[in-house]
Image (cartoon, rainbow, N blue to C red; front, side, top):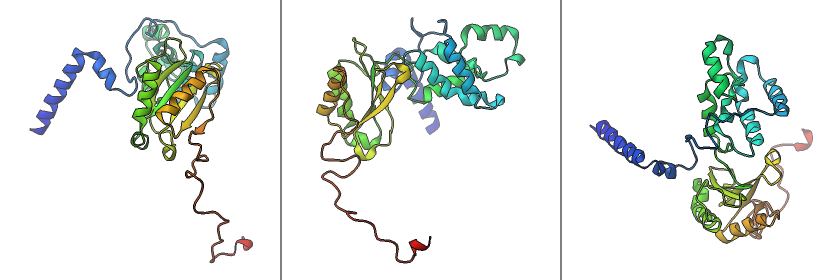
Length: 278
């Protein structure tokens, strides 16, 4: 009985999403599916540059010939760097045949793959094996991003400490929605799950493409307030480099505000052990 009710409810939810496809998109913290667009569809030709083709060979040389698929992540990263910081579906397709056994496939299928498949081509795997990696890891941007891609941590410690207010301040200040790019191309806002700075929550990371997509960096800004995150954005807009790490002047790295109150001296040696004898 419960299973029947659950199935019925699921069908009702699906029907709502079918009637308004943007609804399902708004519930997603990241784009986990592909929608063809004029600048992102499988029919757009995409190839690695000659210089990057040499890098592809070098990457694949790290893995046994029957485990080329192990190179999917570094190949996707290389493709993303070449394409200006984001991954079109045709670039993902470029990796597929690089990790499989095309000699065992039907010639007509090989011809079709040659027309439509690129990272997948290189690793010689089914296209879905590349897509599932690209959609799982938030380091891969599947839509265009800004010169500074602002990723707000949305995990529980940051949420408790006000990450939603941080995101709201960013979106309001920049005049965009999540996963949109500002008109000047400078900023985009997304969400990334836990980045390991829970003690300094809330925090964001800024993926900095100001030196080009091949020289990008991830910079952490922690202990943020809505006011401070806007100040960080304006510093970036002016071409300045805000100090990384905690934005609380009363803290040093992850230390307590105001300084240590314990462990102020050298720790005592354990009484049951002669350290000098070691």
